[in-house]
Length: 417
Image (cartoon, rainbow, N blue to C red; front, side):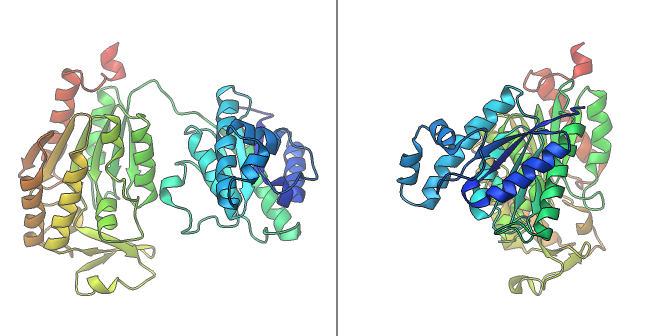
């Protein structure tokens, strides 16, 4: 436990100097050591930073005047973001900081997303933003473990509400620094995607099997941000292999749903050469917020309300063929071992006979399109089973074990001893 953590404070002191001073003093009162980085470009702030805006600009290879003259506030802040990111990652690599707290409006938030995304998973990072939780924040830019706090009443000047929010953000980052437990590296990590066990149940059988082989399993909930985190970590080669069995976010992307991980879903592992075993789990559904009406184009389709937050509509054969094409296009670009297992009897719990999304002709269309379009670099297995059957687990393990034996996947910790 870090009793007296050092926290990097990042903000624009030219417009939010009073707020920065309050945060600094709050951190000091909690026996933390603040390091203040000024990323403002309008004028010199009222308080002295530990890293001036001139130093931030220099880290980006520019003078502050060159940043100011670069064109407009957007280009200027992007340059400052490059400098702040470089400085922050250097401080973290040198173990001079234990966490980061960035604060701002849209400008400061834009910069902070670059900085926090560059810092490693497990390193405490808190963003106090006037647009926290907003759809303006693209999923692709949000660090997997970023803590965001809405800066209510914080656009200009200190007030009672603002002080309360600032103090909570300061407490959040200090608490995170003191309680942080970096991810272990004693066993190779397998990344897996899934939904709740009522829809996809394979993870319950696969976890003990992988652990017995000496691996650790991390399962990501494919409801938008979960898939985004999975993709980011796969692209960083944090996984020894991936079992990407729930591709509903890709179906959502093809169906223009807001519950999306962006267009890069199913690209991270392939681009990094990470061994990937893939299945089209839950690609028969498109999600929408349950507190809204179903999109008009799906009005006649069967639906399943999972809870008061999220609901799903079953998509038709044409939509499923479009998803199959998107899957195959992405797998064709993979640079590492790639296998595709297609369970021909069903791809999630609600498509079984008697369930609301049971649609054999549409399922047959998905299977047919995957069979016809599977690229040459993909090991294709057409499995006469449902994705929630034990046969699917066994098929996935058969590929995994074969790749371990061939040296394509690093051996588990227990096997390596």
